[in-house]
Length: 401
Image (cartoon, rainbow, N blue to C red; front, side, top):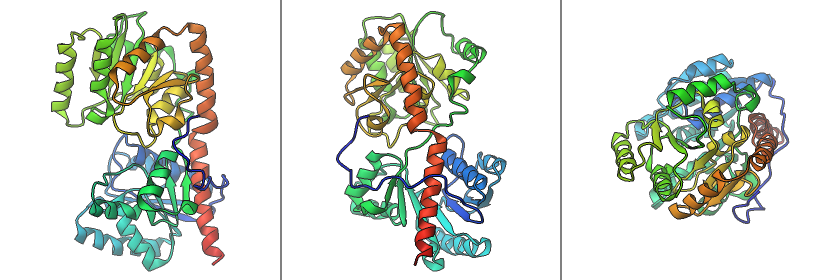
């Protein structure tokens, strides 16, 4: 596996499988909207807490995924912690303090900056343990922004979702290495398992997306936003000499209608109307991956982790990714996929051409290696066990004085 830099001093993950019997944990994030990685991780950790005998509380401004929390036995408390208004943030300190005292919360886990400032104030008043998760690089162009972001380093333990992020928060914010815990995001292997994806599900998607039989498929999953690299992939496809394949951009525009129209104009301008197709958000991503011959992450800025690459590999799909950020930790070059220089459409075109020419027996061997790689390193169970291990670590530290 590729490393990102020499960050070997950053502490390793704690011992997994912590007993949470009788422990109440409060996770705090802006909202429980649909589809986001932060929200999904919140549900997964809440589920793990309950299964290990603990009590899981989540404070947010609500959203479509609140029902998922209830499904796993967690409790949701609606609170305006999404607000960046200083007066509301200050009022939230009192709200969270009252909640912590009333419910006997022993750990507060903050997952975003605005709620983290309120949570930090509340834990200082109550003395309970404080954990944060650094989910991204965050904009840090000036001292004020860095100060605002720095609350995410104030946890007694700071969880980084990749070594790339661990190095970033250590270098830019001066977070002490000894309190950083790198815990990669995990994939639900009960869902992203090639054995469980039926041919019927794949056929339905192929029909809906008007895919012809026998043509290889290149897919870039991700919301339609410029830094995800959709324009780069279109430019790369235009430079490929062969045309006997289809390219899918899978993801909703989330209101970015002008960017979607820009992509459509780019496709039309290159005469790629029959090759490149923009499809909306897909509810059956395991089937989408399975109908693909190669999955691309062409992000023009470093991904903090890059869940798409791991999900695709879990299903045995070869991946091609920009050579920066979390991709360097999740792609084993030449074994499970390939990396190309970021923002280089020529290199991406060359790489995709080579990938489409890989013999079937080589692809089969790569699929086996990719599935094994994810199961050993990026499972949801592993992520949950290690996170609960962090909780146990801070509780033991509190107990010892």
